[in-house]
Length: 259
Image (cartoon, rainbow, N blue to C red; front, side, top):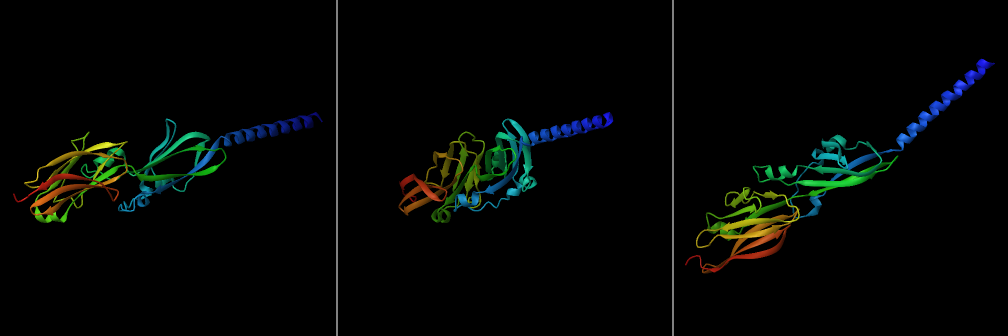
């Protein structure tokens, strides 16, 4: 009889121990949640006049951190797309995604740079929930291209615009008759950034130098043209922003090119 009682107590104790362990697992599970990530490339719909960049978000680099603590870095989106990641419940999570770094955005293509597409999203992990975090990735840097009017192209053999960020003159770009149709220069812009430029046309036109303030995530085109007749011509520079003429600058007014 005593042996039966001891055996019963033993079984009860074992059940209590298993119960406590299960409760411990339950408490642990309540401290975690699950996250899925979705990257969206918004560049094709941001500005309809921009040519498609034809980027593959699957090749974007992604990194996840919580506060100052990295969880993973430099992973490809294709490696986490469609997967569920378990994280401790709480706030201050941040997912970043980009096709290239800021440094690469200016150093690629022999320092002419490339378009940088970037996005980030902060979020909170909720215990015992599975949620999708969507990161919209858009253009992060600005581009500058150049155009010359048909009159300039047909009348002169040499013409150019030299462009550089005022705070980085070592990175200077010359757009001229040999390359302006296919060259684009890219600049990282935080807040605003001053751009210096010099327009050079053959004599009797004098070089014109000025500055212009760039804004982030904009597409700029500097369009140079000559208006007037053969005895009285005016050189103007049109600054086109995202496909719309923003301002027009008179470079040389009322000059006779044949005088």
